Length: 391
Image (cartoon, rainbow, N blue to C red; front, top):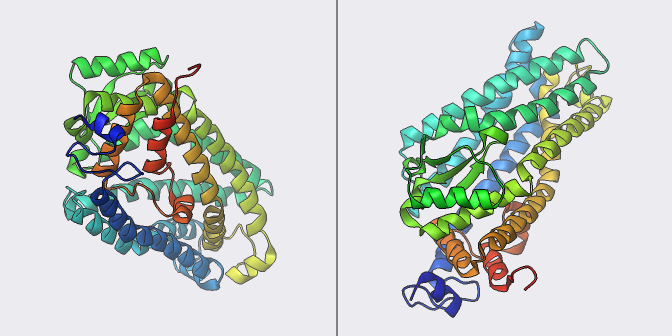
């Protein structure tokens, strides 16, 4: 019996009974076990980072730390940028390392510790220059005009758009190697799928994800002429061609619904609005007094800025993830409408969940707070109840 037929009939390809969620008891237990191991680490890392920002931003400790870099303006801004990036990174390393250990126990890690450390250094090579540029511009404006917040809001919006364009061209190649997919039936099928969806793609690429993980994935990257379909080599090595098409069909749904473009526009608007809110809060004198600075234009207020931004991010995070789940569900519906293959969609979801050791149905509260995608069991139920439009 095929995987597709088995999923629909209530048993796996090996003949094992499936639960109502669409997975065997062993698969469910395995996903639940990893979930229980890693979610406290994710929450702990976020909580530790926020606690650090609050401890340094709402006391004079942050001002003293930045002030230790000298009395001149430029060294203080540089010191703020360095500490704002390095300290949270160092604090988060134990959580990230432990998470890597837990995922390795489930066979998800193929990269050595040396490669893992190099990836962290690459991330710093991106984060530190961005922090330098942002803080020098921000405090430069704050020192010369009372309308600094308006200019900073415009700059934040522009930077959001710029990074959206640069990510696939500059940042992604720093972490993965991309090679054109060999000519053949699968490449032709993916290009035909995109054409049928009215999406123009520049190329179909294969990412060497197997250097780091056994997890499966694919995505559509870039905007306009930079758009390309990217498939993990792990996906191509293990999934049926039809399942690969369904993963790509889901990603094409994001393009058709202009999720990347809308996300960029909303991100730019949100960044601008966030700067305006931050400016109002960090200019409040009681907070400045608590932080040990007389006015925000003093670079020693940088950790106060980080503390307020951290609180804002913690409060808005669940709302953003709820929006993300809604967008992902719409992309699932698009994939089903485009392919009209619900059984294969179920098989694809089972393969992705089992290979990535996902929890088929995580606890509802944690799912609402942490998840950016619908639960696998929910996505399978969607496929099983899907009907063609007009049918």
